[in-house]
Image (cartoon, rainbow, N blue to C red; front, side, top):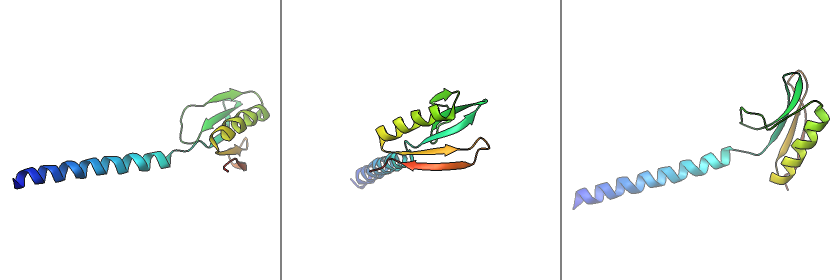
Amino acid sequence: MSTGKTWLRILIDLIEAFISSNESNKRGRTWHQHVVPFEGDWAVRREGNKRITSKHRKQSTAIRKAKSLAKKYKADVIIHRASGGIRERISYDD
């Protein structure tokens, strides 16, 4: 009988570890939108993503797109300079 309790305890510990790791992953991912220089143009990229969301000829167009997404997901827009540094941050978090 003690073997059954041991296995049950191990199973419960594994399930609890899985649930807590899954919750921490959700908190780590945001919907913040970055407006960044990209191949001579401008792009919108979700924070943490390698792929771009959209590409635009003008920074102003990329900013409009990023603002639209940030408002939808109550996130921030981080606007970068052509050199890569951060120029401005706009928050749409209520």
